[in-house]
Length: 142
Image 1 (cartoon, rainbow, N blue to C red):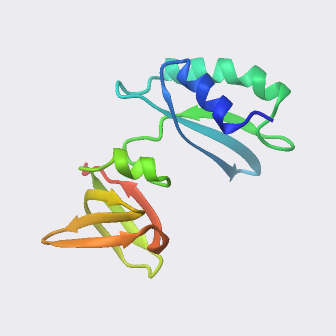
Image 2: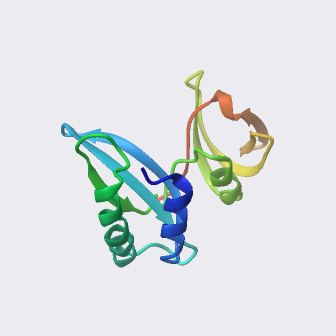
């Protein structure tokens, strides 16, 4: 099985970064989704290039047991923050937060230190530990 470090090297050889991976079920099918990012943005051509390189490798060393579909995608403008590096890269952006207590709010991610996010909601700076967060994603006002 291809390990994460090998996957990162392959993706980086295409001039992009591995943002995250996820396994989801949609319409009774399992999907292994690989998210890539780049300062220049992600094009469909870049997704296709990464897919063309990884698909034959996954045929030999599948990332999952059993049948699955493989997709390469951008995490999008409103992307999930799941790892410390996601938080650090998103400082200065608006975020939509849902806490384990079910409280929800939108604010500006001002800092991230020692697994604590500092989010400014109007005039209040909320210090939120990662273990208090049910979900957080960047937020774009349309």
